[in-house]
Structure formats: C-alpha cells, structure tokens
Image (cartoon, rainbow, N blue to C red; front, side, top):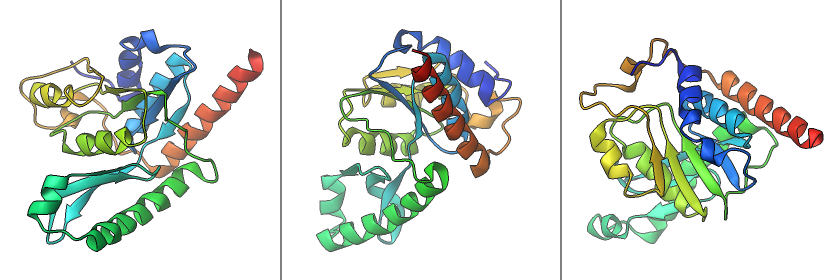
Length: 221
C-alpha cells in the first residue's frame, strides 16, 4: 500500500476508526511532527479533540540508547525496575535525568500549544497516532508513559508498520489499527509518495485549526 501523503494516510486510517466517531470520551493524540498531520485527519473525521503527545526515552548514563524508562511532557513516567537495578542507577540520577528530559519536552510543548493546557486523558479512550512505525521502540516508550496517565482505553493507530512490530505492540495496547503490515520493510517513508518533512509551524497551525473546529462544532450543537 502506498499513501499519497500524510493527509491521504490519515483519511484512510480514519475509515478504520469510524466506530469511535462522535464519542464524547474519545481524544486523539498525534506524535510530532509527522504524526500530527495524520492525527488531524483522524480527529476531524471522528469529531474528536486533537492534541500532541510528546514523550522521550530515559537513557541509561553512558548508554543513552538503552532506556530505563520513558517520560511525557504531560506528566506520565514509566520506569523499568529491572534496568534500574541491573544498571545500578540511583534515585537521584533518575530524578535528574527525568528533569532534564522533561525540560526539553516542556519547551517543545510550549512551542506547539502556546498557553493551551494539554488535554486530560484520564478515563478517556485515547487514540495515539503516528505516521508509521519502524522498530516500534519509540512508540513503545510513548505507550508506557501514556499508560501512567490512566486512560480507560488506549488505541494505537498508524498507517504502516512492519508485521513484526505490529505483533509486539498489539500486546501493550488495547487495540492497534494499521492498514498496511508489509513483511519487507526498510523505512516508513518508502510507503509515501510525498514524505516531506513537517515543520513546527505546520503542527501549530493544525492544532489551532482543530481547536477552532471543535469550538465551532460545540457552538452548532
């Protein structure tokens, strides 16, 4: 399956999610930057509010590719107790690394949201959207951090992912929606005709547009 661009991917993905349309308990979270373009189309089709979800792995000192947990800008944090023990990471190190990572996430959140508060996801059905999955490691970290924010149901929705990553990630969410599961997979971009880089300004524009459309929809009720 080849998508024309992220807009096309979002529209196709939304058709697989129509059971969540017009539900007051549903929120859509896009992973910046490219995932927000896809998520905007999903949120618009479902009549759901849209927000960004910013998260990052917490790296072991001296082995930053090895994660001992993950943190989100919205407050969620997941810690892998096994890695903490085997890497002998102290509580002070955990808090310092968390604080440094969260500073950067908060800075990016401020760029995207301005003064708007993040959406409250506790007790909600959350649809987490990205423009694709490669290894699954980053989205796994995001899922674990998001779980700490106590959504009632967590749905991962992506246009494309390798079958191996899908098989793994489906065990850590309540539902995974993915129209394309190729066995041969090199990179997410090979499944798009147009996979141009998305700039921060585009993310801001889409979030503002989604908020305006939500307000207009409520006013028209």
